[in-house]
Image 1 (cartoon, one colour):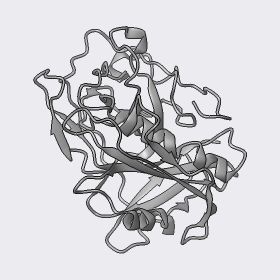
Image 2 (spheres, rainbow, N blue to C red):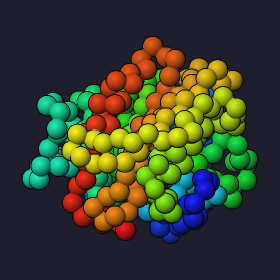
Image 3 (spheres, helix red, strand yellow):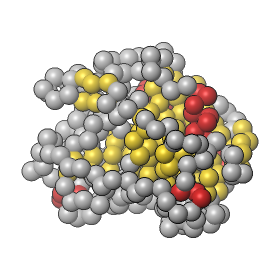
Image 4 (cartoon, helix red, strand yellow):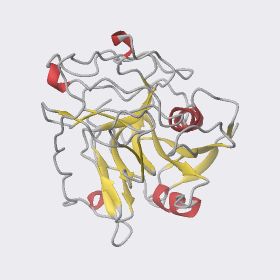
Length: 305
């Protein structure tokens, strides 16, 4: 948990309907990433959605905090092979913020925090009510009380190549998929500045996705830099990267993250982040990341304060 952010409602991850709770996370056998589980937003069916490095949840969890300490108990009757389709993302329409600012790109809208941004056409835009993040691989998942512990989450995400790497490192006979990159927004209640919102998250994303339990390999910026998007949103950005992290598993890699802290139209601090693998053949270029970041803009009145 980072400084200045309260625990929030992390224990109220999902409704009491057992079929809206996530499956039990698998222990980290495919490298230093936590295994992931998923619940399709706005459905009542448990879904086993790829993204070995990503934790996908339904919309009930509070994404204002990092997620450390939050728990969800999985039903003992749930099958990890159960599947469901998430509802399709709404097509951009209407207001200017719902139309891409880069021709041919897709719009990602987050009504909860009143933000929008664009991604290239090969990205998969998830439903606005979807949460995505990283599970904690350091806990003992043989204890049911530890199921569903997360390190950090974002909402209304977009994912690049969620089946980028496939492996069965834990030898359970089931292939796990690892995504190449993801981007989205989260609340940053408790931050006192846009710089604090940016600095509090960048290294947390790298730790959660690429280095845990190791922290020594993370190189982070100590000072956030001022940044203004093309639409005029002013805030601060901070980068973090891992270098030479001890690797284990076919899909393990180093990673990087950039976080842009800013205020939405309601005056609340929010943080947009993009996280991805590094030192791999298909690494997302920093220039592309900055082009995506430049499209971040405000979108109407946030539904969450």
